[in-house]
Image (cartoon, rainbow, N blue to C red; front, side, top):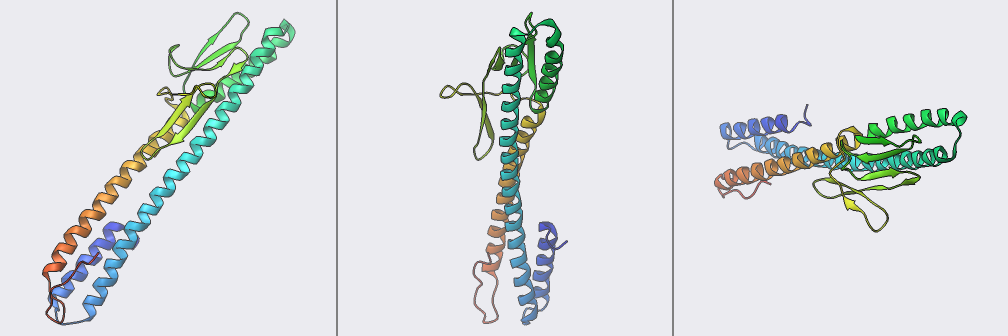
Length: 219
């Protein structure tokens, strides 16, 4: 449709062609100017959409981190109960433990180790080298920061958090990948807009207006 950058550029170039065929007419110039404004607006609209996508991904990632921290806290509580439970009550606790671990794995891949009481230690990533987010009755929070080009996840106790690259697979990794892709697309669109404006301005400065004077910048 008209909101597509490629389509609006095609229409704009067609308008420039009409001017070259009828250089003394005002009508084609007016049409071409309007189409040029449409090109600029379409670039701006794409930029706004990408900016909104980035903000949305960051919001979803932040909510995901909050949900994962809540699950970690719940699992630490189950671990605490397993420490003091008898065999009769432990089965339901073990079922609850497994459900919590399954939910956690939807946010990020986790490594699980169980002790002889059934208590789970949860680490981020595929191996036991990953940072712990649950150990016995203690949960360790994850946090997230968004910088221009990526989402940064951190793990640790308050004041001791360090960046981790062990958020792999799961929805949190998906948000991070999406955020990076949008950032890269923003750069490509900005470069296209700059190069399009630069080239068209260069051509326009070589042309003449109806008074016989050289044209100025178009964008």
